[in-house]
Length: 383
Image 1 (cartoon, rainbow, N blue to C red):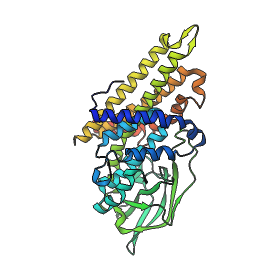
Image 2 (cartoon, one colour):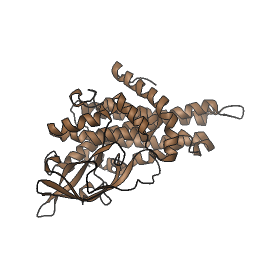
Image 3 (cartoon, rainbow, N blue to C red):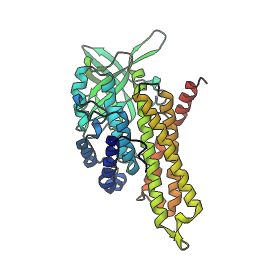
Image 4 (cartoon, rainbow, N blue to C red):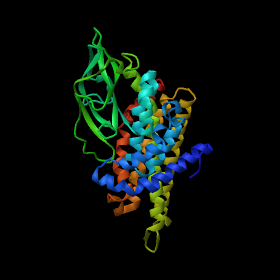
């Protein structure tokens, strides 16, 4: 695989994470997938490597890198195991990034060293049972009472919300309602555990079995008034900014999944024999793998472009949506083709491409569905 012009530092990071994924993640991926258990031993090693601190400054315990470095690491992990990759993505871009982007100095000094080291995991509480793509339909409420926010409501499909390492969940809640019924939504830091905060039983998911995902319930949950994150009433718009950035990271994850399917298919096509020769010599198989590689390469270019724009301070909302749309399509298409190439073996859960087939569907849904991405792109084009 070409280095695509990566700096020596980023190429070293890419190779380091690739070696880690191959030698540490791969041997236990099937076990954690089949038992639906969180890979604590892997996540702790990732923390020791500094992966959770990649995009954060050294003054907050980070590695002094940037968002693109995080994306490179996520892509390499996702080649092997999407559950591990989404744990890193959600822990950084959704769990810690809101604190870094919108927190005051005290909040940054308290939370970022813990989150950057991987000693604590953060979660991002936006989605609700009745508010997914329409996040403006938020029903969770927070009212001020005696210097505390009193929070009532629920959240759904929250990643990293119920592990032994989970220490922070940043939630959105309605803090004011205008006379015309419009809601002012704020974001509030909730330290875990706190009385009134309940982690409901984990979901029984189609894929991402080793990723921690729970519904959450809040009943008269009280946190200090100073736990407000950013400006009151700006929580929803701030979280939309976080989602714009997060789509680049999810695109990187999808590219990793797409590339993993290519890698597995090449190896299988060169080893599996039928009618006296390797099936890779059949043009139908070779052409399918060529199309898969073209998808992965094209999708990689879209997230590289979106990340470059973001880091240069240029508008990137449309490009992030394009990257998320193109890369998630590539992951799902490549997983389907890889399963076909593997034949009956591809239908067995112990086969890595079977796990990619189950895991990749959520990439077309999470952090903005494909339909939402198309809507955003069309709006940015003036349609």
